[in-house]
Amino acid sequence: MTSPDLRSATNQAPPLVGHDVVASDAALTEALVRHGSAALVDDLAPLGREAGSAEAREHGVLANRHHPVLVPYDRWGNRVDEVDFHPSWHWLMDRAVAHGLQAAPWEQQEAGDPHAHLRRAAGFLAWSQTEPGHGCPISMTYAAVPALRTDPAIAAAWTPLLTARSYDPGVRASAQKTGALAGMGMTEKQGGSDVRANVTRARPTADDGWYTLHGHKWFTSAPMNDVFLVLGQADGGLTCFVVPRVLADGTRNRIDVVRLKDKLGNRSNASGELELDGTLAQRLGEEGRGVRTIIEMVAATRLDCVLGSAALMRHALAEASWHVAHRSAFGGLLVDKPLMQNVVADLAVESEAATALAMRLAAAVDRPEDPHEVALRRIALPLAKFWVCKRTPAMVAEALECLGGNGYVEESGLPLMFRESPLNSVWEGSGNVNALDVLRALGREPEVLQAWITEVGAARGADSRLDRAVDDTLSLLGDTGGLESGARRLAGRMAACLQGSLLVRFAPAEVADAFCGSRFDAGYGGTYGMLTSGGLRAVVDRATPVV
Image 1 (cartoon, helix red, strand yellow):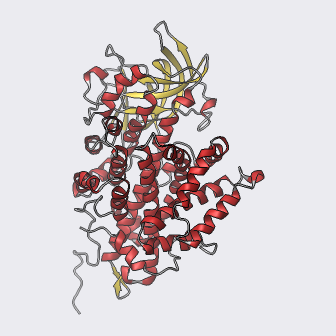
Image 2 (cartoon, helix red, strand yellow):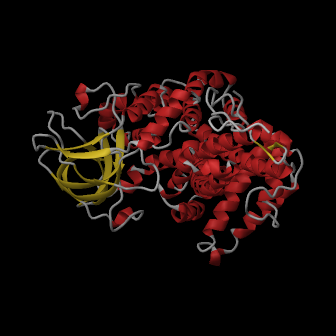
Image 3 (cartoon, one colour):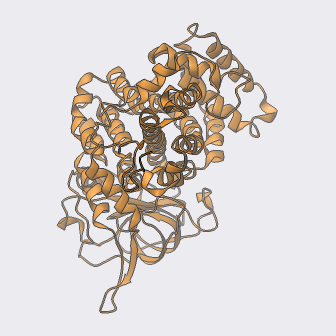
């Protein structure tokens, strides 16, 4: 018997690099064509190829291996409150901005581009698979623009820099920069999601519209950005403010970074606790209208939470399906084993449903004048934010298990994804906050229920299981006494019905059948790999990247 070569490995899946992340995702490309055009797929080809490159993968690894470091003082003892990032972080940020994933779509939309937000959403979903942490400042910059439009003068000062495709890091006055990024500081120690409990005080100065802030912010990402939207209590109530990191005369604003958060995941990105003591801020909107001022910002960040979670799902699925297509066990490839096919097909169905819903919402952003699209976006964003983000941790964990022990080591990339997977459910309103927001929208805005009914009704008669699920969901609305305690159940069912409607109308029959036969089946076990439908190998093959 020949001795094994102990210095060479066999039966290991090759690294998943050198593929087009956009083109190899059938669910994504089909959604782009469905809601936009085939030209959008071509537009995103350079991004897709770069996202799937070995270089991008290596930068993602390094950005997470070398965490940001707070530098409170410079070598001479001056208070500077800066954060040092690894060069790979800057590489990722530079490419994301160059691809227009920050605020560029708002400018493109105003210039007449009918699919600016759809294109950006697909790019954000694909590019986030390089490394999820740097998506946070990109997303906040995207979300800041609609809030800044509350004041045309402030918007005119900042929007050109926020939409510019130039990544220009460093602490300098805005007049000296070719591009800028935005951050946000809403929550405080004592309130969390209950921002109305904020205690930061805003005192007017002699300059009209300018205040000094006095208080703290519990989570601010990322503290090295150029401008921040924060909430503070003015005499007229909770108010939104614009806080520049550097003032017009070049002096640094008083923004003290107390420490950086030691987080479960998202470790490449710096999230800081700030103390504000005499910090200069410009009022955005009327006093007492802070929550109303940031409402469009909240909507934009919720969309990115859905996109970011869909990206984690897709990335985890890609790694799992790639592994089982190349790894042999018990006499054959894993992908040929019926039970493994069932697991990976179930993961593929979950990922496709998330992608389809996320892209449908992005398409709605491109149609702000359409009453149906506006109403659908209002109800479907908190629904999708609740449901897709909640489904992500279990889905990523199952994908990790497909790699066995190989998936539990850092080199596989799955542990990073698993640590990241709970984040989007926490950010911009936890699960309960979003489920309750669904109830609030249903109670105050009758048109949103009609929008949901219209959307799911477009698939009426195509699948009896979906039809029953829609009817059952509507019956839940009649239980007025238990609506709040059952808000999660209602939100989950409404979101799944939206996903089911999209898949029944647009996905291959085997994908739609697997989804409706499991997600709407009372006997479904709740874990992955319990599908009873046929055609599972076709579902797996559809989801497996092609290099």
